[in-house]
Figure (cartoon, rainbow, N blue to C red):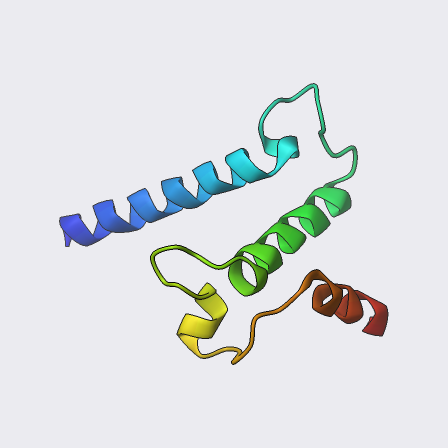
Length: 87
């Protein structure tokens, strides 16, 4: 059971590192921060949409969403923007 806890912890830490490396608002407090929590929530949602649906991962040779069977095609930024327009 303890090894599963360690693996889960390491996966969370890796996701945090990925966010810090790709989103400026998580790198420094003084530069690129969100003044409103709502703006931060939107930025995180946009980051993970791009990470899971648009970005092809080297090890998977496809997006995580395609690997999980959530989608069968590579999304583009325009597809994400169309989701925003529909709301």
